[in-house]
Structures are given as C-alpha cells and as structure tokens.
Image (cartoon, rainbow, N blue to C red):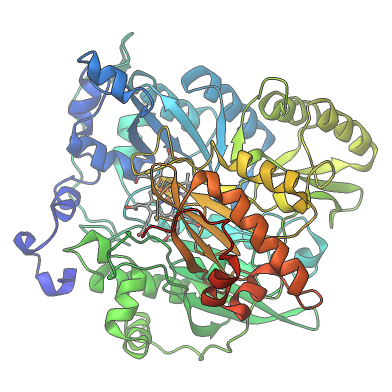
Length: 591
Ligand code: SRM
Ligand code: SF4
C-alpha cells in the first residue's frame, strides 16, 4: 500500500486510475476526442473520467448474449446521476427531470439510495444534450455525482419543513447543499464540455464539434489536489432522533445531538462503508467510528480535515483498499484522529458516543412547520419512477401532481419521495390524484414494504452478478402473501456485495452471490447502527421467501415485547437460527 504522501508523486507505484486522474488536465481526459466521435460508446479512458462528470457507461446486459451470437458489439447506454443535497428538488426541476427522462433516456427515473435522480438508458448521442439541458434549463448539476470526490451529501429530507427540525433551527438540507457546493471539483472541463453554447455544436448524430480545442486546466483542484481522492467519499447528516440517512455507513456522518429540544452539538462519525468482495477477507463492510463532538461552526473544518487526511493517506495502489474505512483501520483510530487534528491545525472535543434512537421513513401525511402547509411521503417501488401497466402509475401521477400543485419534491434515503408545501385546501385533491394513479402513501401499503430497498442491478449495472430491483417486488409480495404484511422489518437486496441499497446495514440483507443466488444476512438493527451477519452464504432465489417466512415465524413466536426482528436475530445468534431452520426449508447451503 502506498498513499499519495508516501508516493512522492511517483506514479509508477500507483494504480492506473491515479495516472488517469493526474493526466486528465482538470477532468478532460479523453472526453473531447470521445465526444467528437460519431460512435455509441466512450473509450476506457474517456469512460473513467466521465464518472467525475456524473455519468457511467453501461450496456444492456439482457441483450449481450444475443448480440454476441449475431457478432454485434454491446448495446451501450449511459447512466446520468444528479446531485441533490438532502434530496431536495424544486417543482420546476422535477418536471424537467421527468421531461428529460422521456426525451433522452428510457422514459423512467430512478430515485437513488443517496437521494438523487438517475437517468438510465441514455444513448451516447443524447448525452451532451441531456447534460446541457440539465444544467442550463433545469439548473441541476451532475458534477461529482460519481468519481473519486465527495458524492451527494445526504440529509433528512424534511429538515426544512418538519416541526421537529425547524423548531431546533437546524436545516440539515441546507447544510448538505452547502457541503456539496464546497466539495464540487473546481473544473472548467465540466462547463466547456457540457454547458458552453459558444463554439460548440452538437451534430445531428449526437457527436460534438468544438470550434477550438478545449483549454486544458493547469492549476490543481484546491480541495482535492492533482489526483483527487483515492476513492469515492460520502457524507450524510442526521440527528439523534433521525438516522434515516444511515449515518454509520458513510465516510463521514454528522449527527445533531439534542437535549430538551435544543441542539447541544454534533457528533462526528468517520470510516463507514459497505462494499466488499465475496471471498476476499481484506475487504469488508464497516460502520463508522465516533471521532469528535463539535459545534456547528466546526463542522466544515473537521470534515475538510478528514477529506484531506484521506486524500493524503488513503491507499493509491489498490482501489479495493482505498476507502476511508481502510485508512482508519490501517492507521488505527487514535492515529487517525491525531491526523485530523494535525490537518485542521487544532483539536476537537472527544465524541460523546450518542446513538440515534429512530429511523423514520416519512411516509404518509404530515403537518409542516409552515402554517397551512403539509407534506406527504409517497412510496415508490424500489425507487423506479415509471408507469407500470395496470398498476402503479408513478411517473404520470407524480408529474400531474407536481405540475398542478407546484409541490416541492424530496427524495428519501430509502428511494421514496416526499411531496411538500401542499396547502391544507389541496390535501384532499392531492390524495385523490395519488389514489387515481395508484401511488401509495402509508395507506394501501403493507407495513413490511415501507422500508424495502433494492439496487439497480440487472440489466444495466456493470457489476451486478444477479437481479435485485426487478425481483425484489416478487420477494416482498411473497412475504405479504405468506401473512407477514403487517410486520415492521427492514429488508434490502443488492445484486452484488457493493451494498448500494445498504444491504449489510439492515435487519435482513439479501446480497447477490451469482446468478439467482444470494447471501442471506440477518441481525442488523432497525436503527442502522449494527451490521447484519451471514446466516447462509448462498441461497437460491426460490428459497428466499420460504426461508425468511420461517425466520419471521420463529421471531413472532419468541420475540420479547416490542423486540425488532434484527435485535431478536442478533440475540439468538446465527448458529442457533441455522439449527432452528434445519427442517427442510433450506434446500441448499452451498458456500
Ligand atoms: Fe453504488 C458502484 C448504483 C449507492 C456502494 N453503484 C455502483 C455503480 C456505479 C456500478 C459501477 O461501478 O459500475 C452502480 C450503477 C448502477 C446504475 O445503473 O445505477 C451503483 N449506488 C448505485 C445506486 C444508484 C443504487 C440505487 O439503486 O439506488 C445508488 C446511487 C447513490 C447516489 O445517488 O449517489 C448507490 N453505492 C451506493 C451505496 C449506498 C450509500 O452510499 O448510501 C453504497 C454503499 C455505501 C458505500 O459506499 O460503501 C454503494 N456502489 C458502491 C460500491 C462499493 C464501494 C466500495 O468502496 O466498497 C460500488 C463499486 C465501486 O465503487 O467500485 C458501487
Ligand atoms: Fe450494481 Fe452491485 Fe451496486 Fe447493485 S450493489 S447497483 S449490483 S454495484
């Protein structure tokens, strides 16, 4: 392992990604040449830098086999990710997103687990137009939504409207927006490539002609330096009464600590992250440690210091070991905290060890702090805002409501939406439209489905080893049909162990292990402060519903009053649970 400091700028010791970043001349890389080509995909170098601009190159994996047979190349599409601090979107922005999804993408939108909107299925020929219009028409940036920089900062999506927050005088959404603003990479490439209307032409085939060659940037990024960060870096803001953002799974968590309805300070957590690789013990999910207790004015100084410690001391040789969580473990917590002080040029008060005591989902109708206004949390199946034939009409219905009532939209950390600023006199009409388009709130929705999450996975995610978003509804419907609809259990599924739906930090995690196979992990807590443990290292999709049903039955028979499933499973232990399940339900337990 070699950090940036230790490398002395000698790239021969570092991973290829480091050279790519350093030689990108301020995040241009091969993008100008790639954009100029009338072809349907980017070069590897171009795609690597494209991420920093908020877009990923993907392909339709369902079509791969058939196309290969026909001797055709992959069917490429781009994914474009926005960056909405705290998930807050104006009505105009929402309507533009809806419009662009139809105009440039696959006619749906994804509400992500970090409170963003994603566009899938965007052909390369539409990419420049989409990025341009997002910025120029909708005032939405995608800069730094992906790549080795600070990603979208999460925050409780009701922090500026819910009395509990507003009475405290703490607008976590605004703080998230401010952190995003401070952490945008300072690059003119983004503006020249996507926004600039002068001397840039988009040809009818979607290729881009630059009248003059884009100007390479000489100066280094003031926050990140020449090679940006070793890896992605995630920040979330919550409160002791609201861990909806899953603070502990972030590189940095900022938790407002309250006493008698007043904020007495902010607990800073560092070193969380969930991704791991099956069979590689050096990789693991990890929850953040408590590192300091600070005042509001000290938040950015400590966050900036942590970013700088990671920039200089994170592993630059092996990207699997490059997240802050590994830096913390390698340095040791004490040395890590010492480095934070060194980079900040001061010390901070030690943490108080305060833990969150709630994990709200915001579904249903709520009074806002602002008199006469209301917000409603609506459920979106696995975050996919689209119209399902004969079922939920999420896309049309939400657009109609936003257009008619100009509601402010927020994306929740569990891939649902909040519609805000609804006047008292409009509540009934909005509810009528939700009913007309089959969009559930906390009504018409089994309890067990409120907090479900599944990641994108197949067909578009490059790293998926199996399904998630497309099969999670079947699992959940199966559990409802088995009689568990009223249970309040957090179940999440991902198509690989990267953990994009935070599947290691929930009560029941289903973690992709290969075609139609999943790790089944249990015993994480409802509040998101404990990781789950492997119960079975590989079960088949068909065994998921019977196995979870059996587990839920055992829990219901043996739980203490009010005991959540995760706490019960943790108390009983996975070894004991396995024994209890040895009655034929589990048909296959291969490792
Ligand atoms: Fe993620 C990579 C989708 C939240 C951990 N994630 C990916 C990529 C870009 C696949 C790739 O690298 O080729 C996926 C794109 C699929 C697609 O078409 O959208 C992808 N991640 C997502 C989203 C869309 C899942 C969703 O369905 O909501 C989420 C977008 C969030 C956003 O708006 O910014 C998303 N990803 C997460 C989270 C959850 C979180 O941040 O709260 C995690 C776990 C926390 C963490 O970071 O440890 C997460 N994604 C990963 C990892 C593992 C990183 C690691 O260092 O361990 C990868 C793989 C990687 O980076 O190499 C990854
Ligand atoms: Fe893709 Fe894996 Fe993330 Fe799911 S968890 S979106 S399969 S990288």
